[in-house]
Length: 229
Image (cartoon, rainbow, N blue to C red):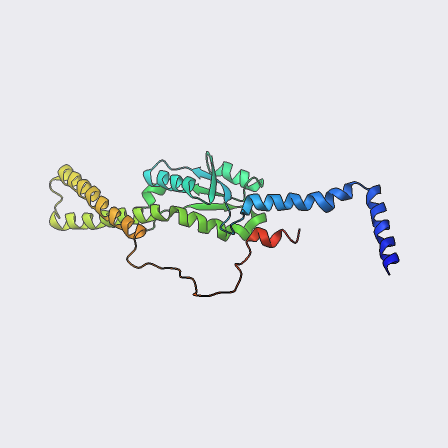
C-alpha cells in the first residue's frame, strides 16, 4: 500500500514539474483569494465596505446633506460622478456594484406629501447584493430624511395656523417673513430634540452576556473561507 501511494505521489510530482503553471493554480491563486477576501471583509466579521458611485443632480440643501451623509458613512466608499447617465454607464461596465443617484428636484420633493426619492442603480450581475446596498444607503440618509420630515411637518402646521388666523391673506410679505422666522425657530428646537432622542433614547436596548458559557465565539467570514482555500 505504501509503495503504491509513493508511486502515485511521484507520478503527480512528475506531471507538475512538466507543467509549472499548475503550481500557480494550486498554491498562488488560493492565497490571492485569501488576500482579496481579507481586504474586502476584514477580520472582524462586521459589515463589509461597499464601493459605489454617487451622482447628485440636485443643488438643494437636502440633496447636499444626503450626499454628505453618504460620503461620511462608515461602510460606504463613495466616488462622485457628474450625473445619472455616467453612473449607469460605469455600473453597467462592472466598475462598481452600485451607484446612488439623487435626482433633480429632490430637495423640494422632501417637503411634499409624496416625499423625495433616491435611486440605486445595481449591477445586474451582482443583484444579490442589492439588499445590502439599500440597507447601507437607507441607514446613511436616515437622519436627513428625519430632518426633512420635521421641516415638512412644521411648514404644514404653520401654514394651516396662519391661514386660520388670517384667512384674507392681508399683510402679504410681512406674514410670509413671520412664517419663515417661526418655521426656522421651531425647526431648530424640534431638530435638537430629535437628535437628542437618537443619541440618548429613553428606551435603550442593552446586551448582557450570559453568566457562564462554554461556547466558542463564532468564526468571522474570513476565518470561515480561508481553510477552504
